[in-house]
Image (cartoon, rainbow, N blue to C red):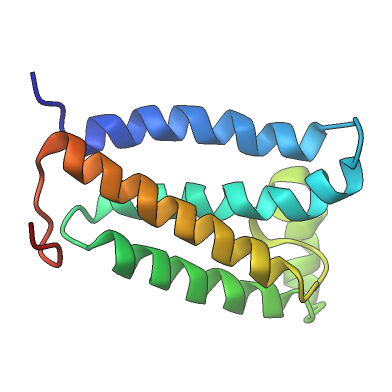
Length: 137
């Protein structure tokens, strides 16, 4: 029985979401790095999978590129301390979604996350024999 890409994407999200939150609550060795840098990998994978679930006709490469660009732009908004953004950043979910401090090294983790997400989404497409518009088999 062949599963749909959406079904496998929901399963993927059920895996990634707890892993991503776990990086924010991790207290062991290298906790600062895990909490503030490695979490960016899971953040990118999460957003790629969400977009992949909603826009099934977009190719994994397009999704990964779009997510990288948008989250990179979002990283720059962390330099902006507007009252509206600061209100959002006061709670855990707000800080998790839009961040609170600009760090150049985050772009590296975003890139790694998007590469992993690209491979993940491509694997889902291959497992489901689903052909998106931009992928040729």
